[in-house]
Structure formats: structure tokens, C-alpha cells
Length: 383
Image 1 (cartoon, helix red, strand yellow):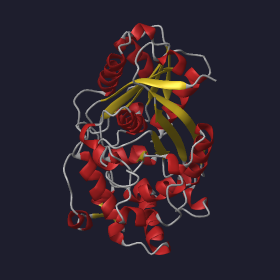
Image 2 (image 1 turned 135 degrees about the vertical axis):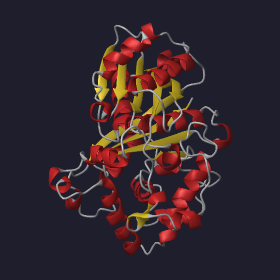
Image 3 (image 1 turned 90 degrees about the vertical axis):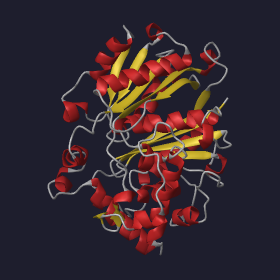
Image 4 (image 1 turned 45 degrees about the vertical axis):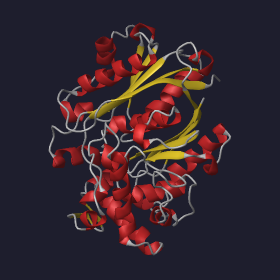
């Protein structure tokens, strides 16, 4: 297989955006091509990571429309939908297209337009990914998060404040991210006194509803220097699936798909958790940062909260997690989130993350669909 390089990357501002999904996708796609200095006519495969453009705004056929809007004809186009892990799945598909030799230049654009719908409407669209037997009882992802958080706190004798400290940390990181939806600090008291959403989780334990887009451009590493000397490499990538029905899992505090996908990604990259210098984890809820940091091998089971308490995952800690601000501060436009994780890591590995910059040669992204129903883990390295 070809080794796969990322030679261009972009991210729009996340938040409440004007325009529609096509506008957001075109903005990120063109910026990514400009970053690499590549003509859209040279793109051979064009993938769009998106969960629900039809449900949110009645717009389908968006990959074909994007090829037209960018002038990327006659590129092969495809939409990648893996719920809130669509971005990570898009990275996997893009990697496959280049690694297999099917494409020499693949553009991936992830995006979602959500804020024009009410919170109740958006929550219902997202909840449609749950199993019908759960959905008919009114189960939503926030309710899963609350139940799991309560179990985790009880099982591992973790203080409620440890979850709040994830929100405080990620908001602090988001201040220095010009693309983040929320660029303001929050203190522990504010998080702990915010309204209860799904006990014990409160408002500041949840990510916002967001519009936005991000993009990556892939080519074989053997051709990367034709475009730039400053590229990154995907050294390992894998995906896995857990039970659709959450209550069928032996332990809901164990993210099996994150464990399996990261194990395979480490094997491909010939790396282990100790090699990782910086990570972007899918903190749709604060509890997920604990569960993923343990599942990908950074910490032992039940020890993720201790790492946060000790400052290990701070930007100036031993293992910075979510230097972008994470979904919590940066925002969570479903199809864009996994792509935006890789954008942040690409910037970190190239030394272009500004005030967020940490010392990093190896990075990991974990993008989660549903409540751990499906996961893609990506390992990126500087070159």
C-alpha cells in the first residue's frame, strides 16, 4: 500500500453561521486546496463527511453539488455517513482511496448545518441513531451520558468536580482557537452550578449545536514533496463497531470500539500509547474524555479522572488532550468534527497551532459515533 500524506488542511469558523451546508463545504474545500496550492481540476476523489443534511435542511446530493461548486469535475464523489463519527470515517475512506492506488489526490470535506433548527429538533435528529427499542422510550445520547457518568463516578470513586474540570480545561484551550464557537473561560463554580440536563451532568458538560466545516487533502507520501515539504503522514488508522443497543454492553464505562480501533491503529503505526504527544478526543460530553482516554490506552481503567485532576491532560501537561478546545468549546458540527480533529493535529505537527502549540511528533484522534457505537482512531506523524 501507499503511505498516505496530508498536504493541505482547513477549517471554517464554527458556530452560528450564515448560509447553508453547500456554502460551508465550499468554503472549507476551497481553503484546503489553496493551502496546498492545488487546482480543483487535479482532485480525483472528493468525499463529503456528513450525517444529516437531508434531515437538517432537506439538501441531498451534496458531494455532487460540491464538485460543481469547487470546479472539481470530473472527480468521483461520495458521501460518508457514520453519524457523529462521519468525519473519522471520511478520513478512513480517503486514506483507503490513496493507499490502494485508486486516487493520487483525494479531497475530504466534512460539514453540518444545524443551528437553524431548534434544540429539540436537532436532538431528535441526533437521537435517531439510537436503536429503535431505545428511541421509542425517549432515550437520547445525553441520557446515556448521564447514566454512564453516574456509574463511572460510583465505580471509581471519582468526584463530580473531575468532570467539570474537563469543561474548564477545554474552554481554556478554546480561547486561543480562532475557529472555536466559544472562546471564553469558564470556572469550576460556573460549571457546577449550571442547569442539570441529565443528572449528574449539567449544561456545561455538553457540547453545543454548531454549524461548520473542515477539509483535508491526501496524496501518496511519495508524491507529497511535489506539493510541499511541510506535510504530515497518517501512520495508523482503524475503525470498529460496538453494540447498537447500549444496555447490552457488559460495562457501559468501557468504550469497546475505541479500544479495538486504537489497538489496530497502534499496530499499523508500530506505535503504542506512550509514543503519543497530543490527542484530540471526542468530548461530546465530558464523561467521554475519561472513557476514551482509558480506551485508547493513555490511562488505566478508572484512572482518566485522576489524570485530569493532576493536570496531565492540560496544554502544558505530559499529554495534552483537546488543545483545540475539543467539541466542548470548539463546537460539534457532526460531519465536520472528526475532520476538524485531524486539522488541529495537522497544525500541531507542523508547528502552526499558534498559542495552542505543544511539542509534538506523534498525534492521535478518536472520533466517536453515537454513544461509542462506532469509532475511528487515527494516528498522525510529522514529516
